Amino acid sequence: MKLFKPLLILPAFSCALVSLSFAETKHEPRKPKPEEAFEYRFSDDLKQTPDSIDRLDKWFTDAKFGAFIHFGVYSTQEGEYKGRGSQHRYSEWIQHSAKIPVEEYRELAKSFNPSEFNAQEWAKTFKDCGIKYVVITSKHHDGFALFDSDVSDYNIHDHTPFKRDLVKELCDACDAEGLKFGVYYSHAQDWDEPDAPYLNYRTKLHELHPDLPEDYKQDFDSYLEGKSIKQMEELVTKYPLDLVWYDTPVDMTYERAKPFSDVIRKHLPNCIINSRIIQRGKGVVKQENLELFDYISIGDKEIPTKKLPLYVESPDSVSSSFGYKKKGKHYYHTPEEMIHRFVNTVCAGGNSLVNNGPMGNGKLDPEAVRIYKTMGEWLEANGESIYNTRRNPLEAKPEWGDVSVSKNGKSLYVHVLDWNAGEINLYGLSAKVDSATFLENGEAVTFAQDGEALTFTLPEKAINQYDTVIKLSLAESVSEEQEKTHIE
Image (cartoon, rainbow, N blue to C red; front, side, top):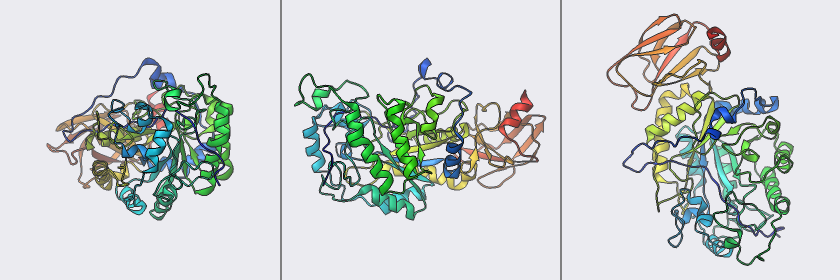
């Protein structure tokens, strides 16, 4: 018997994607507002708690590459409902953007039947592409759950002809492939519930809940206590989760957020929690909130432009929408864009959680798989420069690429993203270089070292069309702190 009947409306939020149509033209990121700048949001004296650092170092800081999955009822609509909603870039927001009343959307949910879903096929695809962990939307802002919930029967097992627990199947499949597994859970927004808040009010409460009294007063805490925290407890007791990914913490105070941290720490003490339990993706990070989570989820599709005092993850995407979209404005990134974004994120000190939106029938989006596979092929040859590495230890990033370093500090990986035949220079390395080789084929690279300056002589053609990596073997270990001390 289900204990709680869902009702509400909330704004759905997700992670943004940028895709590029098959014409593969690059898309320039918009310039951030002053209050969105990393310098404004991150104080240099921020320090993550020792227990969080311990949890992250068990696997997360070595993994680097995750698959994000936005999948649900919205996937069947492909970005438009009865000619409405396609103007919104995120198709997973279709209930909100098309102003679909709750009862009408629930009828759509009744026909949701991803009969071609194959958890083993998904997990194997991710593993073959070099992905190390997987995070799926267990409940997005529409309030519909992809797991068998006893708290609310508005879920894929009880409300649809599919009659299966999709989260459990994918959790088991990921475990079989050796992948870490986590769930996204929209704890604040829930459009099916009238007491949950919205991220924005372009769609009004009464547009999704037309039968509510005009003077209806929302009771956020009633929703949190009646559905949200209870479903989170279900998730952490039913499934061996490695990560919980919260989103859009509308009206979440420290007091409201703490139970959502405590319930995970109680049942799964090594499970990692992201910052959107209380922090907006582009919000100012507060030291007093750090005990509630383990790492920072920066803004949707945001790439770090500088090294930050806390470990971060970029919720990126292969396309401009997180959910599957074919209608309205939509594009896919080129493989080159995705690899460059990935490398820049890792070299700045973070992970890249790259989203794909499966189709409504349960199959993975073929274009997303193509992009993943290209990233995987690059990683097969150059993964040593990504996995188990640490961020650029040098004071500055070269204008033609980026830099990562091995955990022991004895190998420096120079990522040449903008290939120019002839000479390129790298500055600020105090350690003596014993050798330089192209990581992909082991061939020697001609170089000269003069103090802290290195000059490489490059051949006419790049070794890799996306990112040619030069591995420097160093005479002594180099660390970020050592390089800063040397420069000062």
